[in-house]
Length: 145
Image (cartoon, rainbow, N blue to C red; front, top):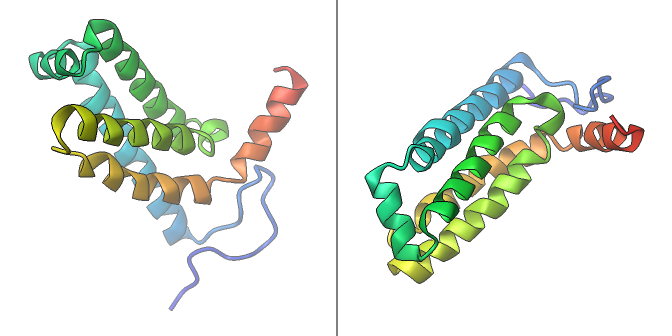
């Protein structure tokens, strides 16, 4: 049995040294989530698909809320793919998913409330795996870049 993540010294990027299988798994989860948030979730909101419009009218947020959430999801999809943002983006998307779950419960009686909760699992996996990237981001922010 191989060790997926070795406790070796951190690499220059702040990320721990990982086996090839772990890197492939991490990249696969990242790309699948980025595609989900960008295409399956953000796109219908940004093109005002009738089902998205109806859902946001039911919530009471209208077009402005729909576009705002769509932009946040698209930004999250892009952020997942940017190495320096890969530590903080899953945390931000997790907060968005908690809000989505609460909204599903309050506005739709819990229908589809499990979907955002299910997404918390791979997001938590990515947040933990990329936590070293947060140091890189903090250093970048402190430099004023």
